[in-house]
Image (cartoon, rainbow over the protein chains, first blue to last red):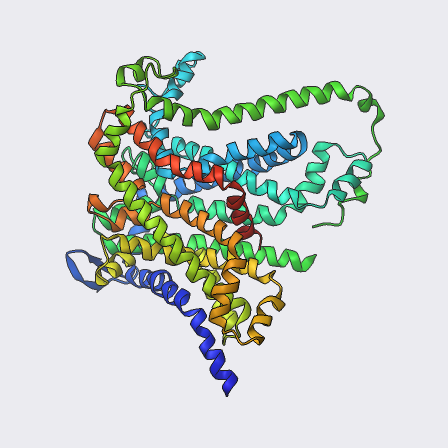
Length: 295
Length: 294
């Protein structure tokens, strides 16, 4: 009995964390799913139950689908750069660069990740600026005037320009994480590969890639989930425009909730985002676990 | 992982390529060097451009965007500072400092409980805490909007303090927990046997021992709170209470074409985190990789 009492008293340690999480993280998620079945806004405080109407609205809303496509584009490009390229970058840093220089490069490449997305976003909106922006000047200087655009002002280039900024900001961050994963690989594996006559490229494919697989899985989850959650950079750079061409699910949710005042529809979009990101994370964890069992 | 790491790769060493290998190697080294340097430029130049442009005036910015500023116009910084940056700076500092204290303390408290104290349903509780890592702020925006109004903290810095704490507890708790797991049990058990209470042990022994990881946790929390945008955008409407990320966006519409002043604002907003990172890079990276690895 006494031990049971002390065990229950032990909950005091976890109570603050659990209460905060319960009230501000878990309750909103559940409440959000419930709200997505209601039609309701700031001026009609009595929510009306509408079943799956909000989801039907989403299914027939072309901008919802465009937002989803933009999120997918974000995910694909980010996977290529923030997982593929940054793994190569990390391997090159570890293999070819002298130790002192390596530390300096790592710090430099990481810097964009510590400035806020807002600062990076506004800075890049200046770089993309057609009047004084660096990008068009650069293209003009090398004779590619026909490639110049009003990058954030044209429907066909806006979302890609935002995605580009995001790669600038994140590639160093994931590269540093890969560097740490590579440093944890036992040196003997590389020694053995070298003895067997494997060159740098061969070592990369047969030692580095298999040995950093856990980090790769983790970064794939984070990158894809992150791509479905983008919000800040789009709000700052285009707010979804021009004419909704660069909307993503996050900004479309925001617009419907707080500008168009259709809270129910916004909740439905939020639920879709939640299911996509959470489902993807669960899927990856399950794949990871099965693989480990097979080993 | 397959077991092919060593033996199946036993390709015979190719002597022919080894003989003239050093030319190829040099070429590869040079190409890699150029690539890495180009990447350094791509990363650093936009930031330098931001700093240079904040000293220019409009005509200079338009005429030669690549050049160094003709003179150091500190007035741009003064103008940006007075146009609102000072207010946003204070608000961001308050929320960041406050949430560092609350997040690290509550998380360390919980982490110690998870590692050392026998608690009913401890597996379920661990799962609940861990699950919080997968919940994204954007998904919670609509319900939180109503909740914060009912709690009467909507449009106040308290709202941000509470949210920045709640949403970062999962990450921070697991960061500290990973560190505590490696702490030798004898250390605090000895104190326990000597009659110290768990609470005393926590304050006098565990917190000091955990200092390195607490520093990492605090730095990552600073990075998060200083840069957070979605909550700050939705839950603060009074412009006197805005934090830097949202305030800077507002300034864009107020300053319109005073580009150099805007650049100055960006520079001032970015500087604290860059400096903090350069000073504490080791702690930053430890926090990131510990939090990722386990």
